[in-house]
Length: 212
Image 1: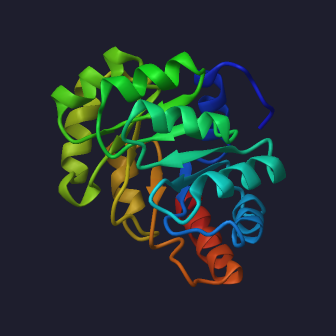
Image 2 (image 1 turned 45 degrees about the vertical axis):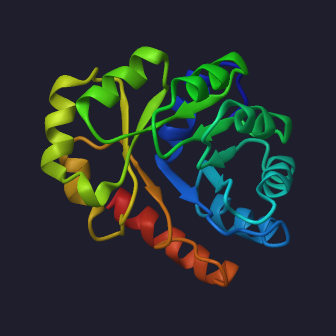
């Protein structure tokens, strides 16, 4: 993925490479280099460090320095000041569990990719109308493949739909058949204390399942 200044193009390139977001909740700055290498070497193009991790901005800055061609940013972004903080750390991605118009507006003003969280058609259309580049369908435990299919039938065809929550290599296929673009991967991929080798093995299992 080559760097671009257009957030929509940046996201499209990353999704074309591999539409899986690695969610590293609990990552420490010391772990960031090894975890980043484990993921990037497995083909991952998008990495998210939730802001409720230890020193998340330091981890984001480290990952961006080491992996400049990877789309890296923060998750659990809840207000516009946090968007500014992520941008200052070099992050180009803002992911939220909810749709906050102020967060989307601030991300757009800073030329960042923004993926707000939605669970209903009302939220989904509102987020897209506000300029969101894609939608985090969260929590996916509440959003069945049948729901994804219903959303896909009414939302713009180009809208990226990314279920997040409880996604494993075993349940991706049914969501993809329903119209999911890709997925956010949390504790099934990374959890605090898991070794980089174990994360790499899980990353490769997800890639095999997605491409299989």
